[in-house]
Image 1 (cartoon, rainbow, N blue to C red):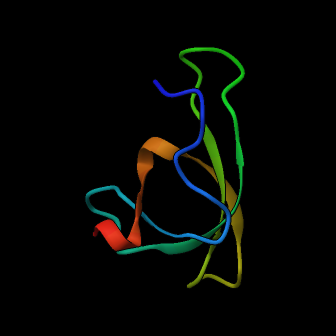
Image 2: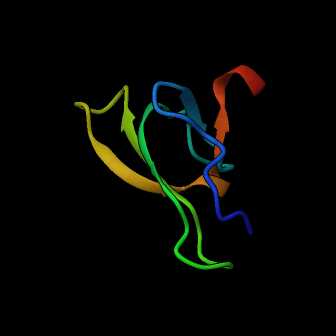
Length: 67
């Protein structure tokens, strides 16, 4: 598992989970994993739901350009 984030603030990401509709969000900030094996978390502001923000593990996100 990565220790450094692969996303940068300002990028658009998609929640990559089968069975969930296309959730698109804006990366607000990232957190470096504290130790090897811990997930890297990304603070995402969702576009479709009243500007809700939440931390998501980066393994569950994809760049919109890559979709």
